[in-house]
Length: 450
Image (cartoon, rainbow, N blue to C red; front, side, top):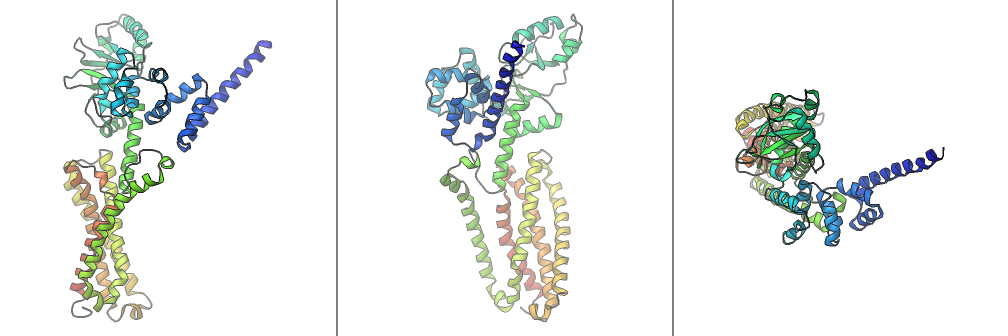
């Protein structure tokens, strides 16, 4: 009984510690720099290591950047090579060599190789430590060899990669398949040769699409000589895909990508991130005033036309924003390629016409059957209704075409399609929408109001 009583507090203490770490992690993004360090330093070494390993590279660097080299080394050496490379990428260029010198020779070589690749490419995301087997090994030898390799910081033991003497990938075998096979069977007899592999320079967005399409846990990475140099695992790409999606969402909203959680961005930094695009859009909207000035004479002669300006402009902007958002997301998911622009164009023309016709009919009926139509719109209310309907059809069609084609134009010129943000498309359509509206008015109302 005494032993049981002595063990109970230990279990409760462990549960309490796990809960404390979980609470700190949940609140981490809301804590300022000083509070983060205070919380981190209050933990015992084991709990601190667990928390440290679960943080992102920027947060890890924030915690150790002001420590002594001896302390930094103890934390750096906890990390797998790819995670260490991510952390060192947060360090200023002039101090990177100092951090690299704190690693053991083998890890330093691996991390240096990873740093040669861009962080958003497969080479920058991969881990160079993985289970390697030879095709002529028998199952018993392979399992023993895996047991030895598992003592190092290999990324995963679920898959073993079969390499020839030139380090070229010839197959993949799972741990379960090895255990299920007879001891004397050769690895080459049970391995899978139809392996999905990715080049070192493949972008993280495309890697995410491959993981999603094939539901993989890990993908081998090969260099220009077809040699296997590492693996990208699901957890590596999950964070990268989240960052990519966040960046796209910010761009769609016409905001520069935030480098830290929302509440951690300083007031002036937030102004800087948002002011640039707003200024560009504001200057763009100035052309709206110029367009209205060009049609000033028509507005004087038919003041009633000004009543429908917000309706016309918003219809085009909304349809353009819808189209751009749909195409940007389809591109991000790999559902639409650059070569598909004509299919998208035809589809969006038909869609724009149908949507414009629906909105145009509603607008026309609203004017035509309004009980006080004569008092509000005058004796030519029927012609005004036709003008609004025709303008809405034209503006919605143009907005849809503009919103759907702009991402393709940006992709063609090697720019990010997400830059075709909804506000940017709306600004373009606002100016052109006015031209469409007053052109329709000039044609339909000529000889009556104009």
